[in-house]
Length: 69
Length: 302
View 1 (cartoon, rainbow over the protein chains, first blue to last red):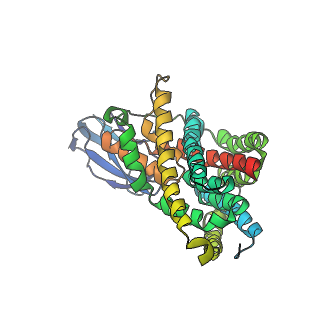
View 2 (cartoon, each protein chain N blue to C red; view 1 turned 60 degrees about the vertical axis):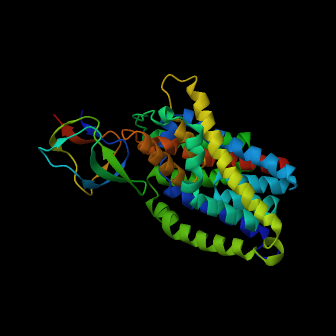
View 3 (tube, rainbow over the protein chains, first blue to last red; view 1 turned 90 degrees about the vertical axis):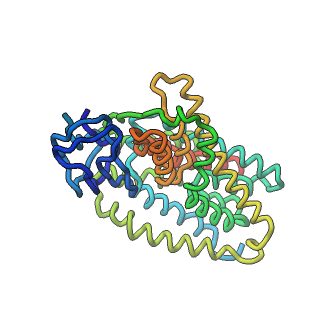
């Protein structure tokens, strides 16, 4: 399952790289939403095939952050 | 009372409301999930309980109302009500209100943990439907009209709140929004802070009653958190798509502090939960609820 943004805000840190394997509930990103650093966790395990955002990007609820295969 | 004239203390909180609501996040969560408006009301029930308690402890009705409204976690409304109903406790209630708003991350979690089970805290809330620009513009306009017709005494508070919202959502008055969020906000904070501070002279502030005000204010915050959470749990009995009862605590409208507290607690219980956006619904509904309740107090006791 792709990692989707459930909070709007600005991406601060991307903690994974393309090709990396992630476990379920692993911290993959930090987004600043409403002046609060919010950690984003992976919904399911998988391999990162695409990272759709970079630090500094603004995201809305529903935006895809990581594409997993 | 010595210090700034009452009329001064009545008008400046209203300007503060406008500048604050310009910087609030948008009411999309309220509009996308209207049930959360009820949670804003639920938290205000705690104010009513505190009102009765304060009166039983010896405060006259206007003072009890000013003290109880601390639980609404709305500084300008507290100052406005205090100036209109009970100037003799205004200083104490203002100090209490702002102090407890800063202490929300300390006051709310124990109450929230006490009233919810681990499973309830794990309830995941998912996507909010996207809210169109038209809806976000219509909301403050219709909201103001409806509430001002129902509770005319809340008109100054409601309209100032909503106009700030409308400034921002319309998208066509960027300069006004920018000024409201920065310069106006800072000016109002300085003026309000100094004016309310000027009412804190020894005769009115250095009295044992003030300790009671602080105590009751704390009770108000805790009770409002409790009633918000309990209403959410009650609503869950009838809902197919359960809401996470933690968001009821965001009905205590310290924006966005209590929403952040809700999010953090939700995330601790279940990492896949992102309650921040959902908690904004009750958060903003709570601001409206406090303004309405203040209007009710004013029309009955003013």
